Image (spheres, rainbow, N blue to C red):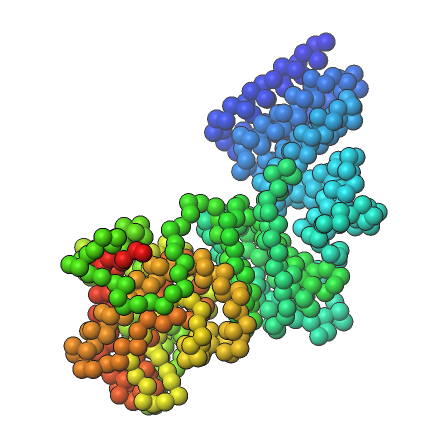
Length: 574
């Protein structure tokens, strides 16, 4: 009796401390775990005490309390795992299915909070084992998750046997995994002949946005799939892509994820010679999956839950008469800034091309990448010098020197820096040396041959590739800031043309154009691409070498941005 009372007293103290949620030190958390674990070992050795349900419950809750109070300490995952283990043991000792349900809940907590823990696959097989008691169809799915999500874990062999055993019970609607992952991800050379290699998986994640890029050494077909969150099973939303005819580079490693929308990335190779990459998200409202070439890579954009963006997806051509000055304001007109909830304080300027990518080259050898950087730096200087009085506080470049930055990384930089506007600077080019003028582009689809050729050149695509992506781009464009981008493009285009006309005489106003520029995908803010001049035109190339001409181009873009930021124009809303 004395031993029993002492044990109850110690357990009660442990539970009170564990559930107090006071910020104890890591040393205290370890001591609390050690004390609770000693009591657990004592219980297992004492046959008379192990019959006391109250003691088991207090121990299971004590381990869970350690996890709740110290979720980031060294013993947190172990404590959570033991809590689930004790509840499972209790169910068999005291014949209670309620304890099994508690064991499943604790195991799911472990997988969600510590997906990289050594206990994660053990927790998953516990869920599968318990589920098998009631539902062999769902048990098949739970065992299969081990093969897909923990292909290198020590539970794969046991799970593989169970998947085969329960195959007759596989739900007819279930298609999460069509075949079993090999236990060894490092494919042998004889098994990789004629296959493409997944060389790297890069990721960038914020609280409401994630971009993951899968690099391959060859182009291969791929198929994206979405698994929605299942509150009953406690599983998060997952987006995965199957890439045919590929294997994973054995030396590839994914950096650990510390915060943001993306919880985890899993990858593995299955018996159909497909690589599956699975993204686990904290939340998901929409996503895009598309590919880029030279080199081939698959881009996965995920947007988390949050307040709905104010967007008007309008594929009608931009008409100059849709922009009306305040002096001619009519009923139905609204201030652009108010209509869009506009507040421009952060601007990211993107000098196109760079490094080994020179862009277009003029008749005398002038490289577009150098001109773009000069215009971008001049624009940045003007915005930093005079923009503060208009509320613009942060201005940055995607590159400030001659370096190569991948297209998908440019809008990622804009997201990382919380840009309110994204402006990509380029020079135009044409087969005809007589082509001249200024035009500004927004992200959209088009049938214009010249616009498609330009987009193909900037995207490092062929014109056919751009056409093939039309269905995919429809979804991306539908969720872009089309309305704000149109307004910004209109103001910048008119301002630049006006500025150059005043100083250099007649210049062709080629207007606002639409094209599927990859560099404008993913910024999720008003975004434009300015084609400042035709570098292939001898006259324009000569001007682009002149610092004064560069300054006037930058001044024109600057004035358009300020006009947009101030909302000094109004749009007539039908």
